[in-house]
Image 1 (cartoon, helix red, strand yellow):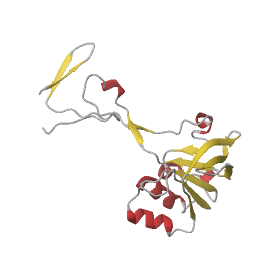
Image 2: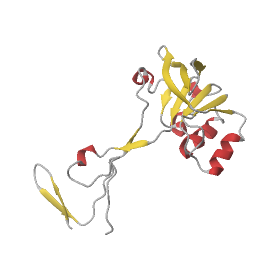
Image 3: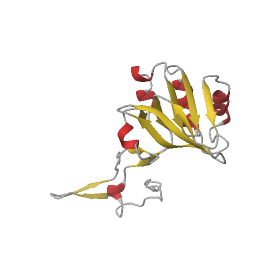
Image 4: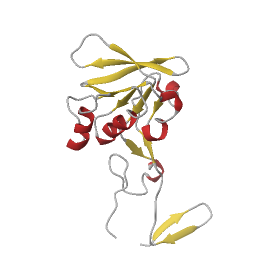
Length: 175
């Protein structure tokens, strides 16, 4: 300390620095993902799930952690039914969140399943699902898919300037 921040014009010194670069939602990297992002795909059920295009429609959430379970339960207030797409054979969510999902009749959990394709025209209409150890893929009609598979920090500009962990999070030290 103090930290030194260099710009093109000058150097600044400070004892404290807040870095608020945010994070971006992780994606599945599917072929049509860019086409349907914000046209049926979202990474925030709370932000987008209440909008008119999702009301009384079949929806899907991808993920198996607390966020995915919370979003699935939340979306049952607006959609007609919610499909929770989970790659593994169990939820990583807390016991309380997992119980909320299992006890909700408006949620169907698709175990050991992943989305392999997105279909529609200008708006998402369905997803193609691949289940582990099942030959035939199934198509699921949904008007929206909500990703709850984590975020990656926007810290690329800090690479080689600060200590980052393998995921890109800043490694801090006690002050």
